View 1 (tube, rainbow, N blue to C red):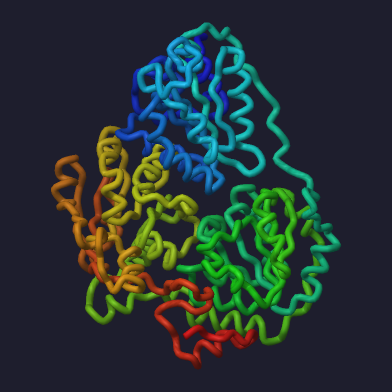
View 2: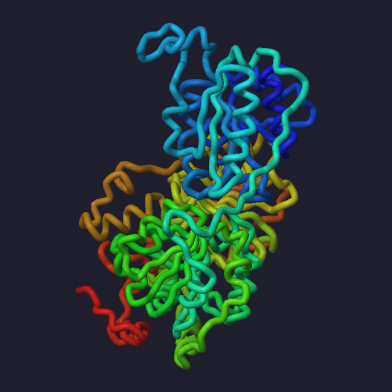
Length: 586
């Protein structure tokens, strides 16, 4: 085998049989090797950014490591946004970039010039901050060793993307006929790392005196495969629990203890319950500022908080917070630490309060603007879409107002709902939907995206058509950047510079027609029926939403998560925060 053929066969034998790519001079030998290998397939995208976003979706769908191939220079740099999606959400993916021959490189000539070979770019140095590992190989032996090392790093511990940069001369060089195997590293890590040790006895102590306990269900639970262990623990002890956005795809929302998703755009009742608990167990969540708010000191300020995370660096954030403690643990070992743990008898008023908040707020998100103006409500649209899709559908949310509307009102039973939570780039959902459909053709795949995000990667409609993918693309068309417009309402006297003013939307019906895709215009949620999703081909569903439709509820700057806009009355605020005497900002 050549080096190029070795790369392809190595990845094939590890289950990565679909390669997402854009052709280019420096990666042509690798793509030729892919094309000649009858056991794999390749899919041509129209922008390298989209290949990385599609690769990100593979692990989220069926735990296959997604793979991209790109050429040097602009091809490689175009991957960066998609790589960042995988890095921040702990998704393993492998990115193979071609590079100029070593004899053409600046290192070879021994001069610190900007560029020697055509399109020579130091991609390894560029992506190191957003990959778990990035390396350029300099020989066939290095290629073999680095493939094993990079792959193992991607799928171990806190997972993430890796990049291997392969000069053209190594792609062409003879590599032998034997693929080298390796033993997968033990995913577990010690429970005592860098001073963050909590024994089982200490975990018990954390819960012994808890009268108003709550669990925060993070994505790390699902990424480690521990969702069944955690749910058994929650159900055994009848613990109320809330979720991060990236966590909500790993359990049934009909679970008795589930109270909703929390944070800046979280469910109002879920936020109230969290802020009134006295012991918060955080499992597999990094508690970013979309959960805690910019005013992080106000988060669960009256509670003791125990954070369990695989990444010790994440735990270091809490050293200065007196009410926080931490344990380093791969949650796949959850039962080894939490099995046999007993929970104290609750405050008699706690569970009735939790139930009251659920009845009042859970699943009750509405658009007051749509109600007043008789326009299409995005919340009702999501709920209707939720009810007519297949039970095991794969649903990808994009970003901005659209992903807020989707995540605030989507009720999961068995569907796989995900988004790029950490990087959250406009345009993610369409290529991710393509990656999801290619990874599992048996699943109904639905892309939920705003008009702004759709235009970021609209060229991938050709990828949909080229591969005959029956993806349903739902465009939440409010003719503007809704989430930023709402920010401009609060802080810029509604000056919609570059969100409404100066920004435009094409005729999506004509766009769909030009690609040969069916188009449906929706102005009333009752127009959404099962037949909307019944076509065996791609469909563009254009939801016409008034440009002034808001995200509700939403936190404004400086406020704690239990005081969201639209603001409730002082009486309701006091009642909802009855266990803690929170003072309201004015």
